[in-house]
Image (cartoon, rainbow, N blue to C red; front, top):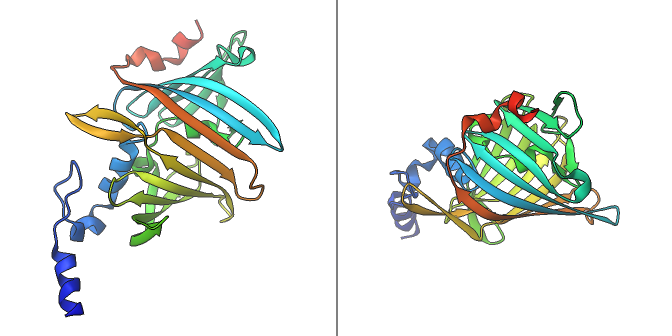
Length: 251
């Protein structure tokens, strides 16, 4: 009887939103699952949103407010507050990143891996493209996070321009959004973790989709060092290509 039940469960059809695949076929569609999770973190479509970052590091608290515009994995970040950083910008285009601020004569090339504020790296605030930037080295379709069934991906960077060398990434089976990530150095050392909440919604192709509302980053060694990123004012809009023109940013 137990064997028959297992067969029934394996043969049952579980449709992923936007994909006509069954649960039994998910191991053949791992990239599609990642792409769905990426959509809920700003992947692909033209979007604009605001991020408020609150960081506690070594007992010291810092806050920043940013506005982000993204389209086709290009991102422009504008610093809104505090006053001392207002007017600064980060541009990510084709996996390259530059820093611009008033008074600079030319843009400064930077890495997505560089620290932005607290536990947040420059790349953490850009749109997510795990499906394109990482190779799946392991996949577990029977994982768990906080008693919720998940797919667990082990991801390895495709190139040195991405934010992390290796990521373990839990994606909810029910909602197809990333709920937890562990970030590792090239030597295999865990150095921070992140959890995600999705209390925002956007409409893509006439379908309502969950969108990230909070990302909490915790230092793996100093547990009290925590960075919280709040996402709000999400708008779907056409972002002109000129937005990501480095020469225009310097004018």
